[in-house]
Image 1 (cartoon, helix red, strand yellow):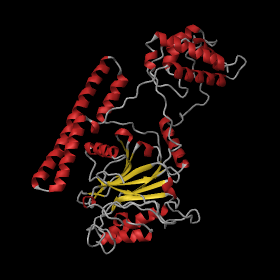
Image 2: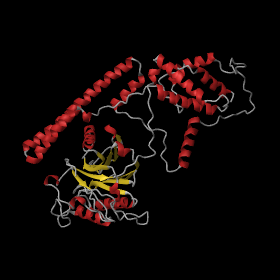
Image 3: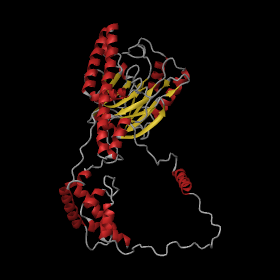
Image 4: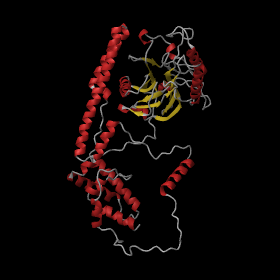
Length: 519
């Protein structure tokens, strides 16, 4: 069992056949793995400790984060997950939507709602690392207190994060919460690894567990015990003795051997080349022209009359030439503010002060602890101010050099503005979406013109126009070529405008133009 500042529950290696392993995250945080008692989908296949034979161990944790409205807290959450190598972190009391965070982390949340007096109620989320994110198959929003995520693997892993009402809440609210949680648990296929992690706001007493933190079981504890018994779950933190310093923790981590697999639906990353360099480097233009011509001549056949096939040869030749000749754009990895040296120093100081405060628990240590938290916030503000100042300098330089795309990218980065997904219609079936698109274009294009006299003669304005109808010549092609704007995105063929404008493949392109004209 790794020694960290959190409680880690190592999976036992001698589970009896048919017994499940369950991870409990404390009196306030509970997790479970591969429970029995769910809806059987495979005729009741026996599940023992077979999933423990997976080679890769991962850390799964749960934590009540209070609130994550402050961007600094979001970054601290990423720093915490990276420090302890946490792949999946279930969080409670979240008020955010989908967020892409530094270091490849992604936060998926079911936001809290406001009650009559304006207080936030519920709110859960799951923070996924980059490796766990690519294995994500589905997200199921159940309530503002229950969120379910399924990860691909052998077997698949389903993670449910939950935030139970407090012990002073109405009994009807608690009953409804456990009813929905019980339904979500039973809906998970039997062969899936199931992990439930959350803040149950419950106390388990010594009468119900051998190693319990509290003396007596409260009302929420009774609900939790009933839920665990019905689904054949074990409150794991009450089955072994913990150190005194670990009896009460805010972060609970379990080390489990799981086999996560990347989702096949994940789009492959496209290689980015420095096409701007092709527009300014004559030597690179000559090398690229020679390479694409040679490769195209090898692929194409003079006897091939299919223009589509010949154009596919050009696309392949361009792809291979780019791989061989073009320099790749360096990856821009912005160092997150949470890993700034000043922030890390302030965080380390806060950790040391917190240790001393937990040990001594005096007014002086409490005051020092609060001051250390303020110093951490100030370190974030200084790092963020310096980042914005550097970005403003980059913006001024880009604006002076007329690099407007780069300038707008800097503005979006500083302002936090993201791309809006447009063109997607939210409907249950294909027929409703088609009807909406039909109505949209009908309103866009308008109604047919009202013709009063069908046989009315329309006078001819131009009798003869100076429009050539013969084949395109090189002079026309050169005029069109000079009008091409560089720096624009290329289409599905992957041929950027810089290649057509700067490389001498005029005869190949002109042949395509004339072939299509008379095709």
